[in-house]
Image (cartoon, rainbow, N blue to C red; front, top):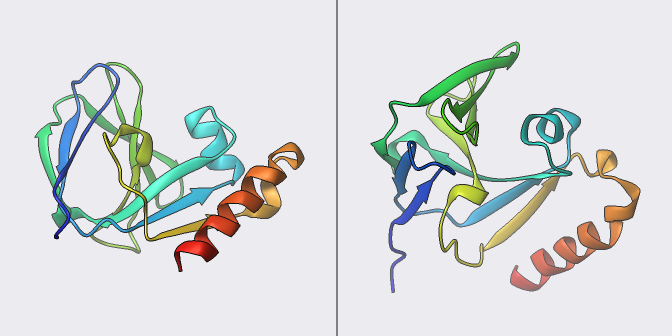
Length: 136
């Protein structure tokens, strides 16, 4: 059975897209920049090619260069983070996983910058590592 497209939207619905497969991996980023940008202790993202994203509504989408060559997109109405991208990775987006409705169990879960994870999150990071080993 082939994977179906997934729907995604920001909090207010002004930014919406449809994600076409493949979307088999999730990256959990623990870096401080991601933590500060999304207001949480880690950021789950889905790396995809731009061509996989069909924008259904993007008039409210804004981009900000958060550091040299790192662009973060967000909904200018509700502030929800939507994706990040880098110029040296043309055509690649790192979609914010929380906006995607009904995301299935990923084939892989990769963690980045685990050394920056908060100490009390260690049981969660270990659980994610074990889960990834079980799905491999």
